[in-house]
Length: 389
Image (cartoon, rainbow, N blue to C red; front, side, top):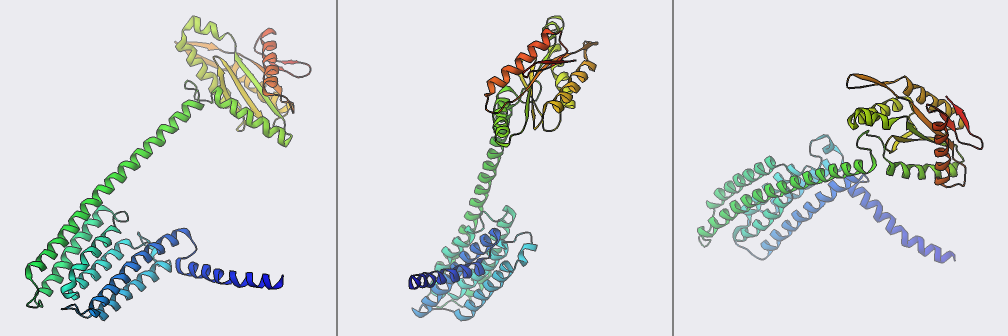
């Protein structure tokens, strides 16, 4: 058994060291890993270019320049950029990934490669295209234009310098065609980047509009349009969740039903717009009297439900009596007239193990008793009903 354990340890050691090596190379933070990974991808491209130029020199391509100096300059710049990113120094800058800097440097190296590649300078054009692709999403449109102009200037300077050193067997027309293709690549990439950024902005706008629409749908589904408080659907879900929590934690929970007295008479006498004003005013009064952890919902018509969590009978009755008294003191202005309101309230406590329907039926029975007793009453629906006014 000991030897098996030892072999397992030997197998995990290389993995452990590999993991540590990856962390040392890329970093541990997610943002840092993304930046260093993107840089390493660009570095692999640069090293591939170095390898291609060395291969061309070994193959005897005519007109090749000083590849060693160019390779040292290119790789040295990569080391500096990596050090700035990996050390976290670049985090102080507006672009922690140094995308703009990397592109300027890569295009400079590419323009230099165009000069020293001799008769094989055509291989630099595909590389230029790949370099520009890195900036399509990481740069602003203004930066992309700057990169395109910068690239044109560098390649024109490289071309002007190379024209003075052309060998007699290298066609000038082919050389001019290369420069024309550089212009085409830079212009096309700039245009494509502009289109991509337009599409990206359009998609972001669509996403924001969809999020707003979903929020509105959610609000419509869970809120009462007239009063702005929770509706019956939301309250049913809320009650079920709170009943389960009360059962699980053995905490008291009260359920109260409120009904505005003589509301039908208000509608018949003053009209439905006046009734809407009364409902809104009633909700405002009740909300000013309930506690922060209580939930008020419109149950239907002039009937409302209050869910009082973690509340026993004594505390709940004080809270609900405060609501009843505040409603009785309030006055609603309708057509220049002040309407006085009263409310009848039936309340009960959830009993562990019973259904929501049983609790609700007991509260409804207490509300009916409050109406029977003359309205403007608070009735406790327990084993024996108690009337408060």
